[in-house]
Image 1 (spheres, rainbow, N blue to C red):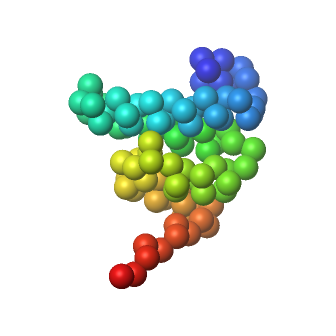
Image 2: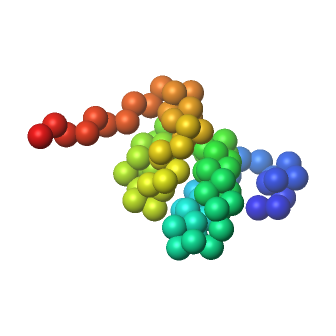
Length: 95
């Protein structure tokens, strides 16, 4: 992953998945109160996973249903990614 960050490795599905999983890890770490900075790291890792993704729209749709990214999905940066890739989240059911 350090090679990716230094620009020494090209897009790769495995690296994209690794960043996605890191985003989940950092959000969960934030939820247990380890560090407030973990949520910032979570969205940064998620953005990197989308940047490296071979199918960013599919990955965004997957994230919309992922309970490990509940707080990330509430962030403006996540919503900006949805707009950028023209992905509309499903509407909440009406009662």
